[in-house]
Length: 360
Image 1 (cartoon, rainbow, N blue to C red):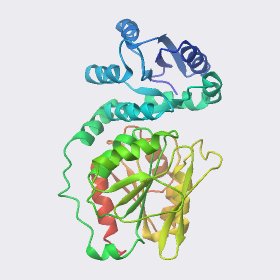
Image 2 (cartoon, rainbow, N blue to C red):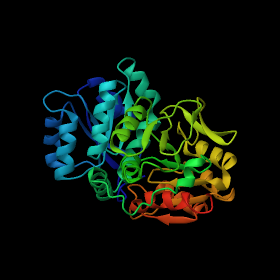
Image 3 (cartoon, helix red, strand yellow):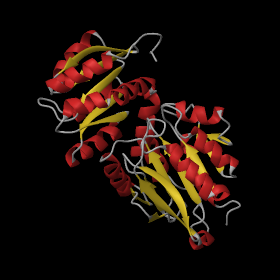
Image 4 (cartoon, one colour):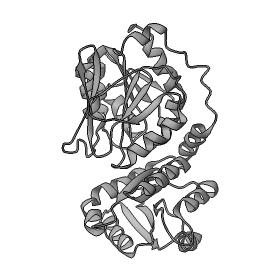
C-alpha cells in the first residue's frame, strides 16, 4: 500500500544503532515503504522533521535527552502523526507503552533485550505490516477516540441489566479489534455499567502487553477487566482479554461458558486471532451471543463474524466514520457478517440493549 500513490515514508527513532540498522534494512526491503531517515533520539528526529515530515514514525520509548513518551505527546499536540511504538518486553516497557497508546500511538512492535537482531529479522513481515497499517490510520479519529476515552464517562444512556440477567451466564458478548482498538475498547468498556453481559475480547497486541492493558482498563472501568487465563469462567460484569501470543476460544461447560487459552500457529497472521474466538462463539453460543468487530487493519474476524450471524447471533460492525482503520469492519460487512453498522459511541448501549432482548 502507498499513501496518496507514493511510498509510505517512515522515520525511525531509536537510541540503539543495531535497531536503527535492522529496522532500516527490513522496512526498505518492502517496496511500499521508504525509510526517510533514522535518528538516535527525538531531538535529532525533530531536526530531520523540520525539512520533511514522515507518514509514520517508529519510536522507541526509553531514550536519552528526551524520552519517547514526551516526544509522542509533543507530536500529537502539534501535528498528529501515526506512531508505532517499538518497546522492550519488560514490565516497565509495558507500563510506558500503555501510556503511549493512551496518548495516541497506533500500535506496538515488541523487542526483547537479548537476541535483538535475530528477533527483528524474524518479525520483518509483522513490522512492515504494522507500519503500513499505521499509515492508514485516520489521526482525527485517533485523537477523538483518545479524548473520548480520557473524558468523564457518561452512562445515563446505557440501561442497566435487568435483575433476571444475574441468574444466567448464557449471554455472551465477543469483541474483535486491532489497529486503534486500544482507544476504542477504552471508550466502550468505560461506558458500561458494573453489571453487564460477560465479554470476551481479542485485541491484536504482542505478548506481555495485554496484561498491562487489562490492568489499566480495570482501573478505569466499572466492570472488571483482566487478561484471560485458561478455563476462566465468562461471568456478568467481567471482560476477558485474550493474552498476546496465545489464542482464545470459548467452550461450554454445563450452563456456563469458559475461556480456553492455548498456543498454536497464527491465524490470519495473528495470535490471538479474532476468527478463532468468533468461530468458537458461533459453535458454542450461537444465538445467545453478540459479536462486535471494531477498528482494525486486515480481515481477521470477518469470516468468524459471518459464522456467528449464520448461527443466529446478533452481529455488529463499527462504522467507517468512527473507525481509525476501517479495514476489519469493512471486510466483515462486505462478507455479509454484520447485521448492523453503528458508530463507536453507540457500542456500549448496543451491548446492553442486545443483552435484554430475546435472551432473558
